Length: 79
View 1: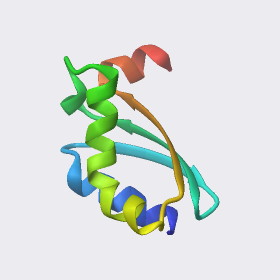
View 2 (view 1 turned 180 degrees about the vertical axis):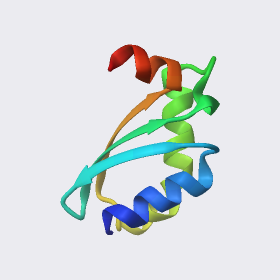
View 3 (view 1 turned 180 degrees about the horizontal axis):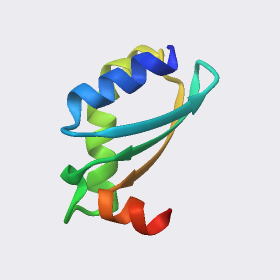
């Protein structure tokens, strides 16, 4: 899969998401920033991202993915 395809899927599925992505076509590292993550546990945050990409993971288009999730406030504090 192309990086832009994954980015578009995440931005469509996760409200007001800002997405940064790196990868080689099969292994990807994504950072997703969205207010939807506020008050959620790290597991729930990752589940939201996995749900958005489930079809591509099941099909094998995405072989491996590393996920980092932040609210906008968490992202700003990190930067």
